[in-house]
Image (cartoon, rainbow, N blue to C red; front, side, top):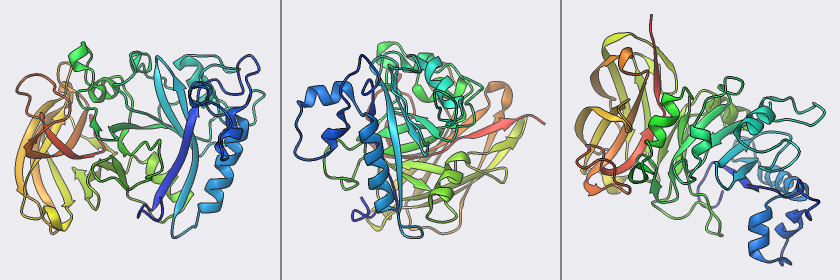
Length: 356
């Protein structure tokens, strides 16, 4: 991953029932080559304690403060409710085991101190993965105030998919709208979600830009907690935004009236001169509505682009900046004729309005 040009990377293997149900053999031994178990069993059972320790040793060996940040994590894997990443925790848990099953059990584990009798993940950070894929959709995205501050992200790009409208054709609300309307303060991630060996290489897969004060685990943790990151599917993009002088991921003191946005958008050279579209997404019935549109010409970065968008907190307390290619269709269709049906290139993490 470092050789592919990434600055920060994480190992987050599936944690489903391995080591925690009916004495199933710990499948962590299968992380060594050659594999000695069938693939279907490894996939069904998931990571065990041995695999968790191996992930730590791999991340510690690769971590190089100031040059490359390597993280250990795990992907809590429930076949119905969905998958949740946890990073930077001392301990791990699976979807079926000592901590119980279901979203409440997971949030209870996430709120519990690592030194508690059963152990917990109160030192970790979490995020919703590929949010429209699983039928249970994280229990309807019901917000748990115990872990509200440490569920920091949602994948808007996973591999080649944009999850803005994922599930709409099956009668579900937009995962973006559902999570934010439920009260979660999630920034937006893009991930390659590799299950092969081409780590970080394929262009067009999701990736994340983090605004960090340094390349270290501590600095990455601080950026994640601040929701100071953006999702993209184009390598080499730089995106930052502020609303009313507050950086993306922050709380904006505002009740109603115009909000001034500043957008720092730099595209790689192959995009220069291409027409792009900036869209400001706001709450709407079932899917976000596009509250503002501005066409711009892609460039390598200069003075920030300035937008003024009327916003009323009574219409909803969040806003998301989306960068799109109007010449290409989107991945997943929402309502017919929706203005955000074009192909997304990047999303900034949301702003949240707080009345004064």
